[in-house]
Image (cartoon, rainbow, N blue to C red; front, side, top):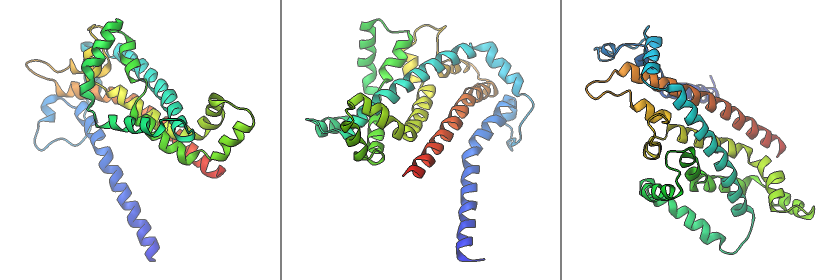
Length: 275
């Protein structure tokens, strides 16, 4: 066997090991969700899938409004994702391809916000939303997350290398204004970056626990992560039921990731062919 083939084989083995290590937590969650709580604490631990999965899922549906909370979380996640993709890509396009007074200063201030812990903004955000009368509504979940520094930074870095200046110049010669350049030149090229940002944003909003816990004051309107927390009892916890709820909440994320990742890879391949 040649050195090159040996390196390729070793690389494949390492990648397969990485995949197995990455998938094991998900498999372990399925194992715990399909067994009983006493089975979880047995020694040595059970490493095979049990027969109580649907029973545990039924307990989840009996204890919380799972599908109602999932619908609320889905609406909030989609709303935030759409707004982030629009506002962040629009700002990134301007930062990357346009010269305007104070551009570098504004971008530096934007980067400085990375050093501010998100927890410090919870109180002022809550007070502001209370003044608007939005506490307990979907607007409190969606509007504060409509744009973020990471998305602007990521899309700006992507736009700088992905959008040739010649395309912008040609659009200007054709008489296209800023928004037309953004729609016809920027967005088609930025699709791979937008796919990644969309996946990242959707998963973050879906898994968010602290902010919905603060602003959603109606116990009948809770996001999924907050609702799942109610499965933990005061005097005891059915861990198999909790893990079944966690498994049910993860399944939609897997679908979103697979769809988004396929689009991301397809757009990258198409862009590589064009260039």
